[in-house]
Amino acid sequence: MRMPLIFAFLLVFLAMPAHADAPAPLPAHATATAANAIHVEAKLSTATPTFGDQIELIATLRYPSNYRVFFPTRPNLRPLLADPANPGKSERQESGGQVTETFHVPLLIVRAGLLRTPPIEVPFHVVTAGGGAGESGSVTIASMKIVVKSQFANDNNVAPSPLPAPRPLIEENVPLEIALLILAMMALSGGLTALGLKIYKNRAALLRPKATVPPHIVAIGRLTDLERSGRLANETPRVVVAELSEILREYLGGRFRFYALDMTSTELLERAKSLNLKQVRLDEIQRFADTSDLVKFAGLPATPEELAELHAFVQDVVSKTMQTAQELDQLRAAETARLALQKKLRLQVMAPTALRVRALALDVLGGSIATAGLAFLAIRTGRQGLFDAAYVLWFVWLAIRDAVGGSSPGKAMTGLEIAAFEVESNETRRAWNDDAPPDDDSILIAKMASWGAKLKRNLLLAVPGAGFVAEIWTAIALPEQRRFGDQWAGTRVIDGRHGMRKGKPAWWPAVLAIALAALLLLAPLVLGGRPA
Image (cartoon, one colour):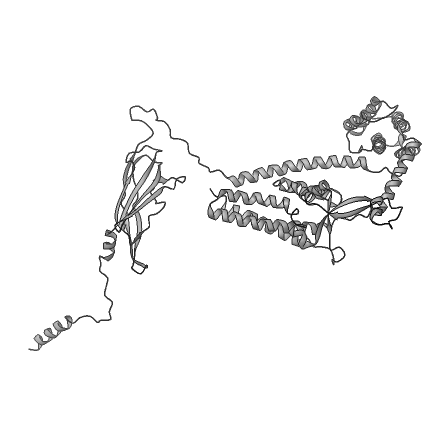
């Protein structure tokens, strides 16, 4: 009697419903039902292509309009390769609550034989009435079989069929090409600058004022000391001939105003053709040069008598070509007038080099910030023209930075100004000031440089790379560290706060600014590169 009651109690307990707060499980077929709403059709444009052909995967998806389907832009279909030069295309149509999307994926055949593509997973999710994401899942595009023929027409005739059009394996590296071009321009600029500085040095020698002691007096004094010392008979011939050659070269260079000590014998003879040597014949100088070269460099022995003959020849050249008393008087008068005028001129020296470099570094940093910003914008938007224009505008900025306004931003922050100097005669000054001293013939005055002169002094910097090489080199080699642009435009960079500064200007701000500018200019090239 007790056992039937127990069985009845168990049956009643199992029949009781679950607690109302327990979550109801989702139907097992919910995701499958959502996936069944998406119809997939996929095929290849041809099932029997030839090795090297380009084909297309054509996938068509049909689904309700409240679905969001995400077909991969570059699906993995190896051993078929996606064409990097052709991203493909897609078409979308919506009608009656149904969406039809067709995707065309270009593929390149790079393997022959029987091939099978891997399945493609296409994720999706259902958009709820509130706009949120509901059920999600994925549908699969099944694997497809493809038979690829080789390049041979058939097994009996092994003559190859025509090869497909060649495809470039290496893409064009425009930044590298531009960098190599700039390096070549910098090397060419360095060579031309070295040649220009040599010409400048020779021309400066022609404009150099004559020495106070005439060159023939110096030469005769050295020849007399050599003769009285007895070294013509006792000294090594090579040493004596070297000193005689130096005396002759120093005399000719001082007498006719050129650098004879730096010339070879061939260059000296070539220059002697254009000199007024009066009664001295050119073949005599050539004979002396040949003999001295053999003794100095080849170790040819020479007797005391031969050394005395060479000594007499040098003395004869000096006596026949030395300046007359009238020529010396004219030179002294010209030198006196030059020194007197120099005392009257009030010259404004160039600003310290550290300050000028700091101003340039600030200008370069400002241009680099703008260039980097435009370059990254071009990379983000994929615009090649904007990327190239960013770097072109950087060089344009270096050329025009002083022409707009009083001076460049860097010079304004460092207190520098660009001045042009003019010689004003005393007659002009007396027209405005009757108290001008009557003995003051002329005076050098500083004026603000015109916009044309400011533009002219920076034109060389607009040449990529080459301009910097030329300007830096000339700033080091030319007097006052006055670079070629200032020499050409007749301008000087002066310190507008002269006398108000404490201590010497430091170099580290300029070095830091230039380093930051270099990083900013290289960042778009390294991180993003030129848009394809």
